[in-house]
Amino acid sequence: MESVNVALNPLDWSGVSAITSILMLLINFFLLVSVIFAYRTIKEEVKNRDSTLLLWAMDEMSKIKSDLSLLHNAGDYSNGELGSEDHEVAWSKETVDAAYRVSIVMQRLSYMAMSGLISREHFSKMWGPAFIKAWDSLEPYIHHKRFLNGEPLTLAEGAYSRNDFEKYALYCRDLNT
Image (cartoon, rainbow, N blue to C red; front, top):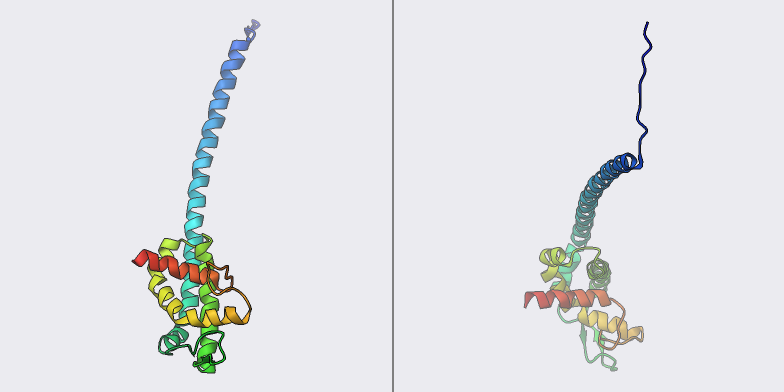
């Protein structure tokens, strides 16, 4: 049998460089594809989170529907000027309790919208008029609560109780005008 000789030419540095370049091209392509898939996944997850938060918000709004109806038909909150001796709350205890529940829920939802956790635009399209109407009904109640707590009455003065609710109601009012 004849012996078989295999002659391999030694690989020089230009060959190593070419193989390395091809390998780097494949790695970069793989990384680019994975970044594209990650972007799509994150985008879908954000949509999912937004829809979950909006469903939660819908549930919260449905819980206070009867309270909102009670407040819209309640009439004036008080008689007399706030801070004076003749100031007297005209609402019944039931209506004041409803105002408390509504203001808490509206503050929470407004915080979510004002801090960017929920899209302001989607939220205002769904409930903008409800927030405006609720703020108009609850403004004297909230100002009275601020007065009793010894804090400023308006946002311009530095009020902090239910401030996101007030800011969001004003934002919605500005959108609708």
